[in-house]
Length: 510
Image 1: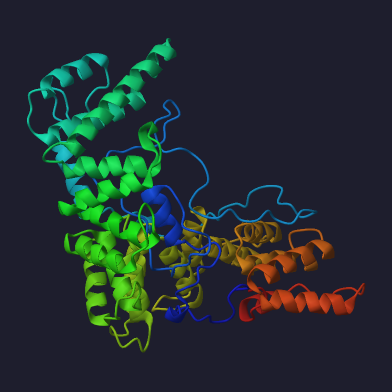
Image 2 (image 1 turned 30 degrees about the vertical axis):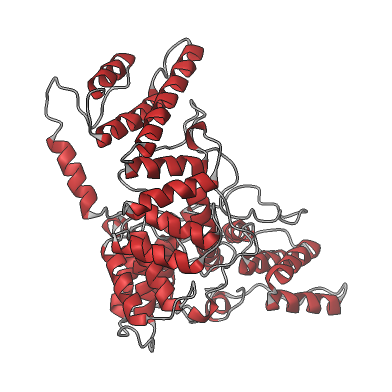
């Protein structure tokens, strides 16, 4: 393929843990944003496997953004730095690229495999939905009459968990009640009332003589992200996480660790962060198991490297992997892929199996990896353009820049009987990845513009993209092209369109 050369080194280098390439998932920003609604200082860097966003726990109320209520997480910039605006001029993408439609691939191979626990929950719900006149507690109605009845019923219940469930029900009701009512002003007022009642209940549970840890954890989330109309207060969020962690709340212990590592709501204390990551992992938190494994594998946060213990924690995290926590599967696969890691046996077939499991759980880096494996015939995978394009497409659908660039390469050459060659699609996919700041893609857009592939030949436009690639990350090929173009002056560029074989066998654009 045009982007990768005849056979790239598919094994990552653990010596470059301090760098996160543009377009890659930046775990540090995701962790900071998800936990406390903020990002760390721009100068902070973390390895591509050092952080991950906290999982959404089953006992946490679903608080998706609702257009009908202003109480939930405020909209705005995500945890990533926005990419700099692309150079202007000709060549602006007139429309979005088209996702490849690959037929003949076993759909079962690409089904999202839900964890066994999810299947068990689904089965239990099915069993409880027999025809009955009783209220289905798994799907209670959102009406004023039911809320009043629920309120009266809960008053005499001494169980804090029951009151916490009631508060979460009120929050859900505030999102859904009165959607079809004519008097929306009255509806909004009633929703405000429900939210305030829910907050009052949760605060009481979190601060009573025997505080309820789930309420402390939930309230901390609200203060950390500004949910339910609360003013963001990282210090108060940290204090509540810490109080819940003292009661051995696993997820809260993980949040305390993240806060101490990032200095969010408290001062930065890496050793203390390591202590709480270990505590959370020991309490069974999957994210903490993965993070502790990476800390011990890399020797970060001031901890001594302990590969044997690191592998044990990664294996435990992998056993509990789900859609929110697929990361350990990917890291173990990387280790089994390495010929001389000295940590685990070199086992390409097992590495492929782990990558596949993580890919089915939606992990884009594993999906991209499988696209590479089927493109080049690595890790016991046969060379299979259909599967390669299908996995690249899965990752590209989620905006993974490397996969978008890989699709550009496939469109540049086409694949007989699988994907029709298209210069315009090749350019558009490269442009989409370049707009995210991926240096290789920026170079590719410059190359396309210089040669006239998928875009009218425009030397000045090509120079701007080459300069962008060279300036941001020191892309050597971009620098070389700029030097050559300067030497050539007004003479016609000697760069020609690659033949099909050149695009496959040489690193024409990478």
